[in-house]
Length: 102
Image (tube, rainbow, N blue to C red; front, side):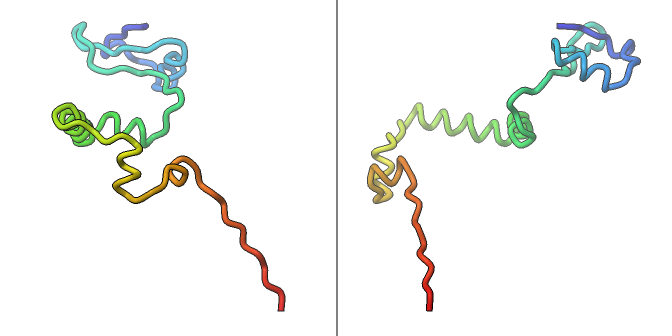
């Protein structure tokens, strides 16, 4: 991990992004961390956006708390409630269409 005081960060963002491929670059202000430049592996923009969205994180936390208090359905219970068979929930069956000739 590299630590860099913001006032001394005079190189381009490209430079620090390339450096982050090897190790995180922690940007500090008066010695206190305020930002990080890190390489993202196996993540898309939507995942990164949601993982930093306070409303989404609050929604997940409420859901986890509710599950702790009230419990949760098993996959089989959910399929039963939705009227699905076990097979329909575990795999999709492709339907073939036949062409009609006149």
